[in-house]
Amino acid sequence: TNSCVAVIESGAPKVLETPEGKRTVPSVVSFKGKEIIVGDSAKRQMVTNKNTIFSIKRLIGTDQKVTAQGKEYSPEEISAYILSYIKEYAEKRVGEKVQKAVITVPAYFNDSQRQSTKNAGKIAGLEVVRIVNEPTAAALAYGLDKKEEEKKILVYDLGGGTFDVSLLEVSDGTFQVLATSGDNNLGGDDWDQRIIKWLLESIQKEHSVDLSKDNLVMQRLKEAAEKAKIELSSVQQTQIMLPFLSMVRGEPLNVDFSLTREQFQLFTKDLLERTIAPVKDAIAESKLSLSDINEVLLVGGSTRMPAVQELVEKLTGKKPNLSINPDEVVALGASVQAGILAGDIKDILLLDVTPLTLSIETLGGVATPLIPRNSTIPIDKKQLFSTAVDNQPSVDIHVVQGERPMANQNKSLGTFTLQGIKQAPKGMPKIEVSFSIDANGILTVKAEDKDTGKQNNITINQASGLSEEEINKIIREAEENLEQDKKVKEEIEIKNEAESWISMLENQMKDDSSKIPEASKEETKKLIEEFKKLLEEKKYDELKAKMNQLK
Image 1: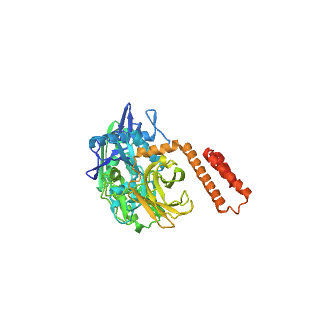
Image 2: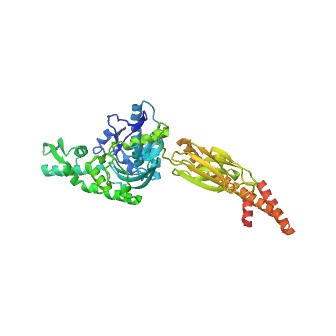
Image 3: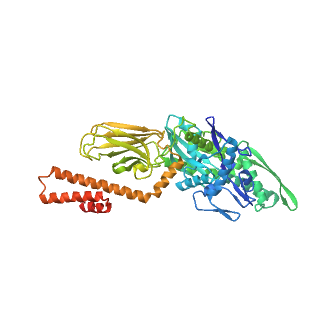
């Protein structure tokens, strides 16, 4: 329903005001001739101008289009108009170009919806460096990541058009979404509609006229309803005065009604009750009990309604934390995340996922993955490896990052050597390699000879070290070279297997020479020569066929 932008200023998050001096901007786009209007001006013509688009977030990530002035627009394009407007006024406020942004999305958004959000940012001229879950952003804004102990947080988010409830666990600066629930068709707009309905019924009763088909009247009623709803959050009664609302039987119609908070709560009671089931569902899905919840956060302007706050307290047994403006809390959290990524905020641990696959180089230059990309951190992974030649005294551990199958095609992060390996035929020593990424995104790679207990390790700060653009380029290159890379990797695997066969056959000839009949010796020698010749001539298909026969 609304958008909000914040920046880090002198180490603290700060909301930037709109050109109208407001702290949020309606997410509404209106088309009028060649003019594209965004924000409050567009909202004022939501009813009167049919070429006005709102609640576009509900369509993001779908193929659905919206039509204005006979032209079709994708949800990304409409979202981009809103983001461009925000970018423009943010630049005026901060006095410099804004090129990068952190954008928040509901926790339930799927990959397609998240990608579409990034695309909207791109169209608006923004590099979206991170997409953050809205409940996580709210928790960041409240500084809950800085608490030492583990916390369970319930986030009750009642926006203009949707209702979401999320349960988070925050521990050591890492956020985990335990459960989400909600209602995509329930929001503050529904409370406004009930006031509009009440006003229309009151006008009908008092003046015997139905004004529901008059667009200008409906626009004024909509504005009056929203104003009344806001006022009833702080007062027990509000006066709705609309002079010259319409002409009825040649006379100007002046409206003057009094609405109490009690009346309002009575005719919206069923809307409020619709939020109960999602809260209970989320708690059940998270497998937590009410006593496990340490903190309750309210997000969205509609949570200012006293009835909402009372219900949340009744449901959870906890007084909601109301210390931050619910309209702004998510944007403030997004700016905290931006500050972390820009290096301006250093005392908060980074919530992250591994942007690219982390691997080690193995025989033939192959990159063997240990931690796949998009793994949530902290994470630990272990795998056993061995030596490539007989009596190998040491192994080099080369750590790489990227999506290509060959180590030299990826970004090298570091190398270290494990010395003192017990002398043994190749393939016999057991070398355990472990990758560990902590909550700070710091990678530690350790190698240990399981026979001797000898070990060594390397610590790599910022396991990414790449911009989003570089990450995308790496992923794109991996996709473009998929077939070629597959072929190269397969050839190396065939080569490695053939060399293992040669080594095994030569060892058999050496160890059991006296027991092997002459005819078999000749046959084995011939097979070894054939393998070596095919390897030299790089005839990998023939090699593969030969090995399959032997199996």
